[in-house]
Image (cartoon, rainbow, N blue to C red; front, side):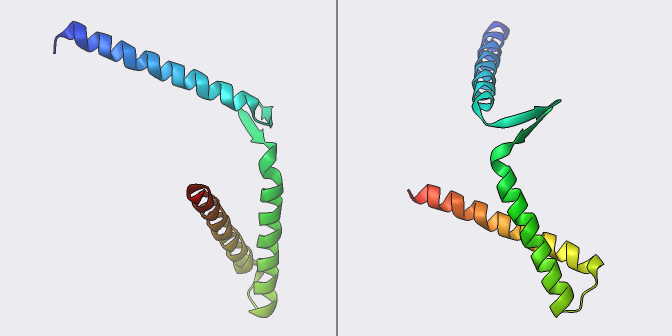
Length: 100
């Protein structure tokens, strides 16, 4: 392939990449979110986060009470279980979306 042809192919791919990035940026502007500096806080995810933290606290309390764990071991256990529940929920959401 000639150097001139490589340059035109490279410029076409970068132009397409810029168009895709611009389209993705415009989609992000439509989301409900709060922009703090360079970070964006998605307000739709706050209830899920609070429920997962509540679940982690509940698991930590049960581990400390029923299994006589110390707080230093019960809290990471509760957070681990909450992360696993979140992964399960995301997997189920993708699985149901895939089936429909």
